[in-house]
Length: 208
Image (cartoon, rainbow, N blue to C red):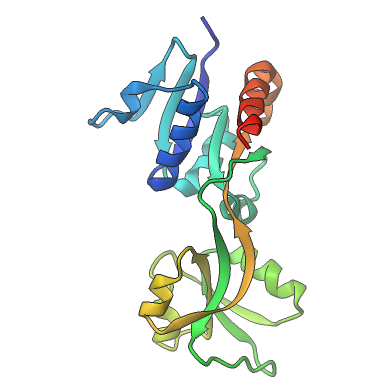
């Protein structure tokens, strides 16, 4: 019997796409797609154990050894800076982190720029690289409201299609970075389960 490899997947559409990748390389777990309230799904024949986690928590589970590997967005890796190994870009969940504002917004460099975001570190790093003074307002949801209600000048957020921005009379001012889902590994697991993790990474690399 193979050693069990514990895998954290993000809940939602990205997690569904990620599981399909694992299934496509032979690491399927049929119980995972069955209806019910189970939290952990195991296929001993394939030597895998999956569990769903909030997307922002996946890296925490991996860093602390509750999962050997996990799938997480590059935005979360750059924001949280977890102590894990970033193994590869899986090429799914592609979108971008961008700055958006009301249509026609004009920045006044003579005063601090007020920015609403949940990506505080990414935002600070981006504007520091541009030498721009900012005031960050941290929000966790409906970030588009901040400039609409004149609470901030701009927002920094994930943009996929831009439809939500358009519907609220906002537009992208500048792109910060493209992002996608990455495969990460716990540092101890990477050492003690090197063969299995290395084989898995190779299978993903061969799919590109």
